[in-house]
Image (cartoon, rainbow, N blue to C red; front, side, top):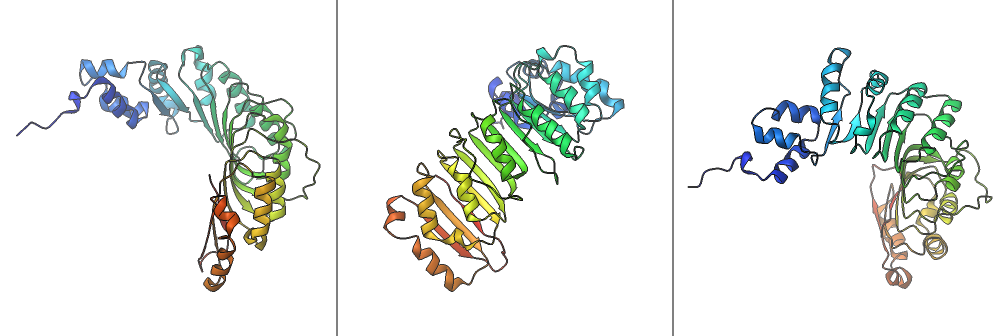
Length: 335
């Protein structure tokens, strides 16, 4: 019988994959550091990609984690600081340029004044392309406008995730062209989103977890967002007509994912979908699923409408199912 294999028998590349799966610098070093000389060499290999989460650190442990941070500065690809100590952290590190692999910065529970400092310092990170902000500390309209302007002015950020919880985003102070290619928003009014369109010409992917429309949208918007190919939106009481208006300005969508809490039965009208597909969504190949509180007998009739020649020719599948517990309509479309 052959002896069981040992983890030390793995090649260096495979062993690095195991360590990267563990991911966090703190757990990796606590578990593997100084076990043997070979593992120490792997731990210090610049090809090793790790992240660090400092959310649970305290003022008493800052020195240890700062030394660990500096030791692994060439290996870090993601940093999530404890925001109570973030200012101290960024003011202590005088050579941010040495964090040559750090691509992602995750910030939580930050005040605007602290964010301004951190974002200014983050410009020294040569590889930074992704920024995630999740905070309940920014609440006034003025502060939110200032925040959005500051984030979209960042020349290096290409992926932005923004969550202000119950507070809605405002983009009317964004006035410079952004390099952002992927945008994930927690809450956004469609009017505010339209304010942003002229300044994100490189945007390819957009996800909105809660989209509503408080004010009446007009047809005055002239800017097409031709770069956008992926749109994922949770709709809150947005009529089908307003959805059509939104999609009119993103003509090259290839993947469209819609969920929502809507009361407009036009979402189930085949003529409306056909018109929109022919006019606004010519590049889309659609697989649609609609879930709503509905009698099963009515579902069959609605679904039959979408099994005619046009839908078959376009390779479009439209599925509807009944669920007595649902009071929302859910539509999923994709290429």
